[in-house]
Length: 186
Image (cartoon, rainbow, N blue to C red; front, top):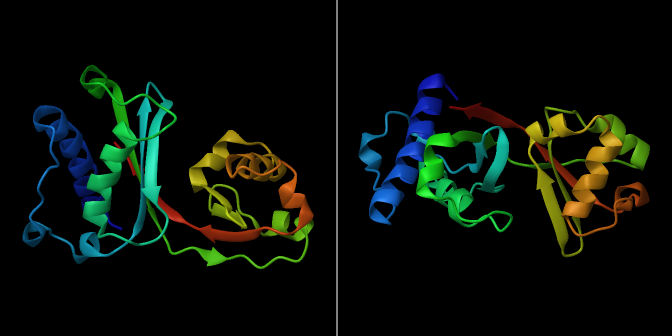
């Protein structure tokens, strides 16, 4: 993804928020005006909002279910107003909001034969990780690695996020997928 595409997507995100506060409606984007075919590709994407360097909302699609420019428009509004961890964004907060976008690759199943093998194969700050067990699942984006000193702590936290016990990854029964992301921000 080139810098021009990154700037365009950040612009869409910012405009979508501002437009929503002004009109209570979604911004319209004329697809024929898009300068890059990449923006029309279906891609997994997350939009993260920060206020004074603290998480303020993060919503996205892991799978490529929507064209990239539309996914950014949808996910910026969801991150602002629908993240259940936070109250909906207020207009007076907008000036303090910093936007980050993560465009994902398609997740690939990570084959491993034991918890120690899983630890060896995970690449901090490179791999986004999805874990699944039955009806339980969760993901952390690649940049979430920054919050952890050890791979074990990362996996334990991810298990808790999925609603599992923190040591579930040690049992060797998780299905694990990894992906990478182009991460850029204002």
